Length: 299
Image (cartoon, rainbow, N blue to C red):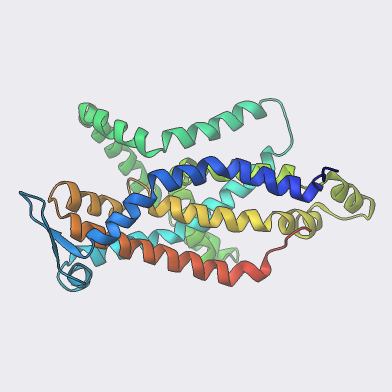
């Protein structure tokens, strides 16, 4: 008699089916470059013949002792971590607003999905090539925006917020979020849809039971919504870190590209890539270890 799969086994099998294209693509498209960059990082290449010469750990030592710019752009890139909480909070808040259908909700969702396309590396490369044609207009617009920003800075809002009891740290956080709102929006599209999927996956019976018990919206959020979506918050946090560090506009990525394809230092650029990768891996591992015990997993 043929054994039938349980519901849990069917869900697990479906998960493997959905991830199979990515796994196959990773094996055939990424494994070989990863191995080659690891090998290249221990070599130097002749710029004419491209003949490799084994030099051991020289490239890695040079990154910190001989190259003054790499540590600088590395620290600059790591400082972008401060934007991760802003992106997560914004995308989570927008997802909660878009959870329930309302007139025009489909259009709003389309707008946020459009930001994913507009912020893609391919689009940014195309945009940078086209932008050179309109530099004069862009510079004029940027000048006007800078003048407006300078005028707004003249109004010291920090004193007003402090007078009503808002701590300076909170004001700095809010001010940073407002000044980076455009960047936050274009980097939040994927996270919003991931949060939306998680919110729609919460059983409606939980909210009905909470309502019958007289739970307020605030209590419902902290007792049901937040715990049930906590695994997705961690996933989105990791995704946002990787997306930020791997962006075409990231200073380390830009510097590595210039060293590899303008100066043809393939060995040194490979070593920097591995240093950068290890930094990202350590950060993600620390975040996972710190928050894994605070994650609620529904069984």
